[in-house]
Amino acid sequence: MTDQHSYYVILFKSVSYALKAEKILKQEGLPHKLIPVPKHISSDCGVCLRIDVDAKDKIVALLSGKVDLEEIRKLAD
Amino acid sequence: MTEIKIVDAKNLSCPQPVILARQALETNKQVKVIVDNDTALENVKRLGGKFGCEVSVEAKSGGIYEIALIRRADINKEEDFSPSCTIGEAQSGPFVIVVNEDKMGRGNDELGTVLIKSFCHTIAEQAQKPDIIIFYNTGVKLTIQGSDVLDDLKQLESEGVQILVCGTCLNFFEIKEKLAVGVVSNMYDIVEAMSSAGRLFAP
Image (tube, rainbow over all chains, first blue to last red; front, side, top):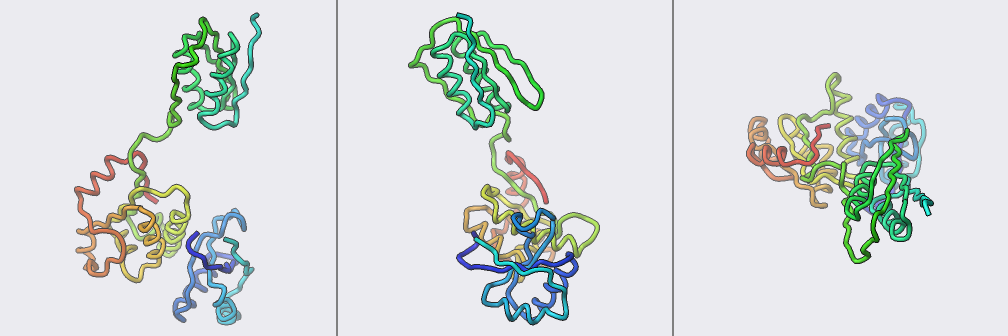
C-alpha cells in the first residue's frame, strides 16, 4: 500500500532484539522501518523490521552475530 | 391467512434488511424480521411505522431482535422509504486523532517510542483514515525533519489527511524551521477541530 516496493520483514524473539537491530541499522544508515508485525504473520502485538529486498543480504550479514534473528519473511503486498 | 412470513436478515448490512422487510410486507400481511444490529432494528421499525403497521419488538439473546410487523393496509408501492445506514454510529463530524506526546503511553519511554512509530504506521495503512491529526506538546517532534514517522505522516497528508501542528509548541522547542509535514496551527484551529469532531481519540 505504501508504494510498489517489495519488502522483507525480520522477526525477533523479543522487542528488545528488534530495538537493538534498529539501533545498528540506524548507525550504519541502512534504510529500514520498525513496524508492527503484520497480522497475517502473528497476532502478537510485536514489532519487526521491514527492509528493502535489495538490502536484505547486507542487513542480515551486518546483524548476524550481533542480534538473534528469529525469522526473515517476504512481505506480500 | 395469519401466516407469518419470516425474514432472516441477520448478517446482512444496511440497507439490505429493510429492503427485504419491505418486499416481504408488499405480499404478506404479517412479517417477522430477524436482525442482529441496532441500525437494522431502527430502520425496520421506522419502515413499519411509515407503512402503518403494528410493530412489536422482541429482544433475543446475542443482540438479535425479532420485529413483528402486522400490516393494516396495502403498501403504496410508490412511496419512498430511505433507510438511514448511520443510526447508532458516531455523530457526524470529522474523525480526529490527537497526538499529545512523541510517545505512546506512559511508563517506559523507549517502549513508548516504539509504540508511537507502530501507531503512525498502522494509521497510515488503515482503509479508514482520520480527517485531521493534531500534534501538540512533544507530539510536534514527530512532524519535524529526522522524525521516524515522517514518511507515514507525509503519506497520510498526501491522501488528504489534514495535519495540524501546534505553533506554540514548535516555538517552545525551537524547532519551527524544521517542520517537515503539516501546517503550523494555533489553539483556535485546534479547539475548533476537537470540538467539531464526530470521533476523537489520542493514542
